Length: 63
Image (cartoon, rainbow, N blue to C red):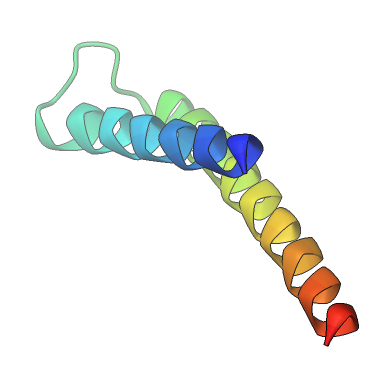
């Protein structure tokens, strides 16, 4: 569960960072930085769902 919690924390931090960059007009805001941050966030979310799928598979086999 630690991995899931770390991923959730990382996802929230990345989401907040991206939100702040876009809405508060961060000085480094460019299309490139938004795209890079979005890609990193997407990778973290995908990793989270992979872990959740593995957990679901374990529980479905246990039943």
